[in-house]
Image (cartoon, rainbow, N blue to C red; front, side, top):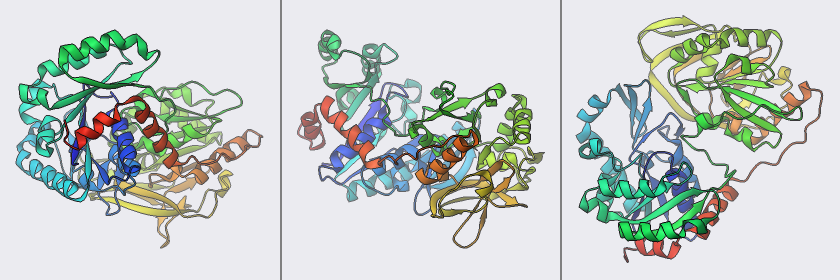
Length: 492
């Protein structure tokens, strides 16, 4: 038992979720299993215990497998900064900001990093579940592949090819992808999976028979859409536009920055039964929201310029004057401050810009990136009717910008270090993950309800293990697990 790879006909077909579910399925059967994705492109990152960055999807998959996240699970993370540049993170540490051509010039170095991580995982675990990226049929990238069939060959892994039926055309997706693969790579595909079905699976029966005849590949199953699974989806931020809240619900509006990062800070609000979480790009939609959130950003000054262009600066100023709550997280906290200085051009051309001036303090960018897991205690939120307990909340930092408060502090660390700032109905923090903590999130929601003059019953925190088990049960019910077992044991 060694490796199995999940590839897709395109992005957003459900590879990350299927990999997480299979991690859980095999882990609870007593198999030591670890996730792996050689190269991930995402601004949704996590921080390992040693301070290294990795893709959020691999951190979730590690949790599903009962493991602590480790940078070997995602040795290369590309964090887009513009249409042409990405920050390249190798084994958890920033290497440089570069174009795709510059990135390809480091291919030998990148291959060595991938091989080292894959080798360590294969030595230490009985099964490595590997996630691909995009599609293996990108023929213009075939000779530069570092994440699909090249990895399958390196790992000697059979491949499951996944197609998403929800947008339509799934048979063409699967047949067309196989047709564009080389003969050797096509032979490596051991089975097909149709994902995200809505409706009656028996309607697909004639098509499945013809699909197997056309491709000479077994279809392992048709997996229905699993609503409210409660797990982060890296590519799902843009689909979360949402509806307006009813008078009985709380509405939390999140600004849809072009370079929005770490949306998982806020996903937990979707678990609150009386909360509607919306992603907005129109300043008018801040009116009527119980809370407006400025999330993290990979390009803080650029996203601040976008915010001003969209009319949010005026809307937020007016909101603060009315005493209506605003929260900034990391880059959002920096925008709410008085000034952002980037003298070395860490995030674009060197320069400085005025912030929104809603929090006392300013930001100065440093060349070294601070990435670490932290604990924080509530400090200055009592005046906002946020009656949070005095527990130490776990979070993590990922930032070049150092925000220094000149006023009250929102949170403090165990050694007394100050985090964020508070002014009136506005507060900010440089720590990701705090609002994902159920007790703090619940206290915020209770405070928002109190502003409306109503009481709110606290909700029980969802059990992460139960989410993973539900997903594993779902896959077990709809996939040919016996066939999968034969694959991972090299019996096919």
